[in-house]
Image 1 (cartoon, rainbow, N blue to C red):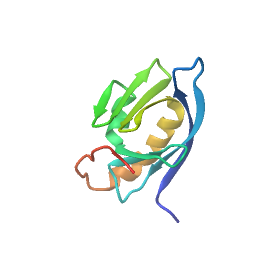
Image 2: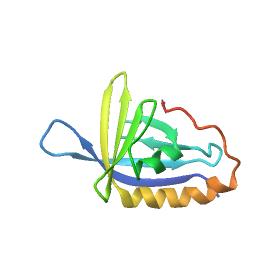
Image 3: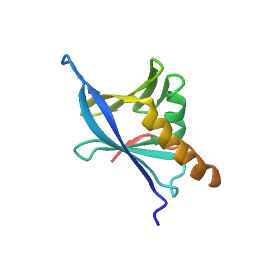
Image 4: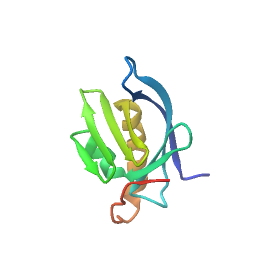
Length: 122
């Protein structure tokens, strides 16, 4: 039985166009990296950043390295990812993120806290 938690979610890619484009996103948590969450975008881009950053971003604007997260109204969250190739802005409904975080909290609480990771793009 795998201890890794994976949750599929839909995000909206915000562009200069009139309508956001829906994109499938995979959220991943591995207890071997208890302070880290991975967000895999279409095309295989994988972003890793602190689980605490995602939790804080649900309540108020939060930034670490190349990742910015902030609430958008009462039911949505914006994640802004900066790389040398440009910026991706994704808008999520809160419900799948809260569900994912609920599943990870129990596993993360059982592990010894580690230093918060820096944001990286794989």
